[in-house]
Length: 206
Image (cartoon, rainbow, N blue to C red; front, side):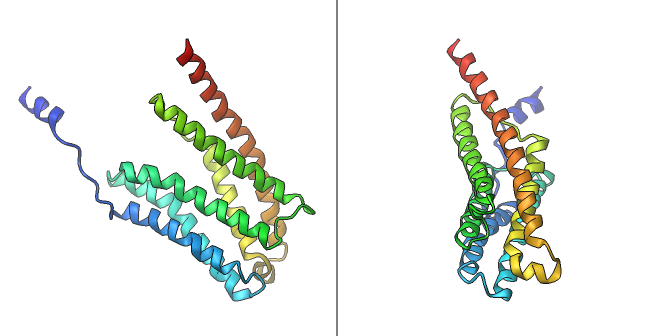
């Protein structure tokens, strides 16, 4: 009984802001200005590879920061807050710059896929904030994880662009197709999250 009482009142383990999972998340945020800066010179082949490399490393950390935090018991409020922010900053900045450089245009309709993805991110962020006030968590579904994977791979192909075409012909087309796939899945997952949010809202009113 004494040991149980001591366990109940024991303070939670304090996770350092400089834990490896958090550092990986910081790195993903730091990659955003690097990729954006590179895309100011989209016609330079080696700069394209730098943008692709920075993005690829950042995308990989998206998996490892969460995995390591769970495996090492280093999950923290700071990490939970920054992880989705880092993801949205990276994806949003890349989509905007790809539109600015003419990769995503009205002509190839790919800009609509980008709009769908960005609108969904805003919707889900607002929904999570609302549900947090009700102390309701919104778990990430397996389909949403696959959507994120397809989205990151698509952006990677598109960032490589002309440089990637020299290694893999059709690189840009592959990226556009995957972007549309992720946009379609985004619509479904966004609707699923919205439906859950409305359900909790109705229950709260009752």
